[in-house]
Length: 231
Image (tube, rainbow, N blue to C red; front, top):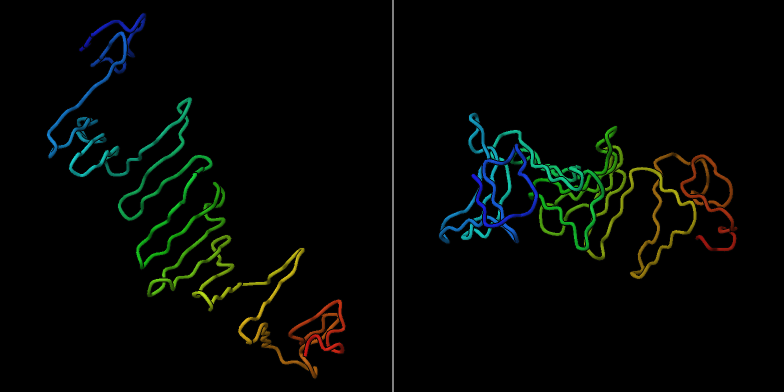
């Protein structure tokens, strides 16, 4: 069927999609109108699946929907030169959005999950899909969750606590290549606590100088004990 309102020029419709052709010498379009309480849409199907995919607009629900009703199908968005940019897949409860490249945004990225689950951002590649993760584990009540950083699926650091009782927990060593660690005590409390689970053979667990087995804290560069900088 060729609906011809005017000539578009020297052009022929694609033979794979020419069952309905709408042509005009200017702007051209297809307009679907329905009552407010109903939906307007286009369905795509085959003999085995008459409603495999669809485009619908529902004025009452204020929704414009593009999707697939067939189990196991994916929605693929392509950019220039038919290059896939985004693939949406997964059934209810296992939804997955896969971007082929960088994701740019001028606003926030919000990750929402149920109270019993964890929200996470996952970084990986074809060799290791879970190389890095930023995880937020919900607490039993509001504002009691834990922010976690993971590498190779292993939690490396956890941050928790409300204002005034913040706690940062590292799973292993903390190394600074440059810079310093500053500890400011504004509440007249212990600013630095060192706990050693090894049995010390020395009179003190705080010393200045070289590493010695059994000492809980090493201070390098100053005679801290004799000058009273560490009591």
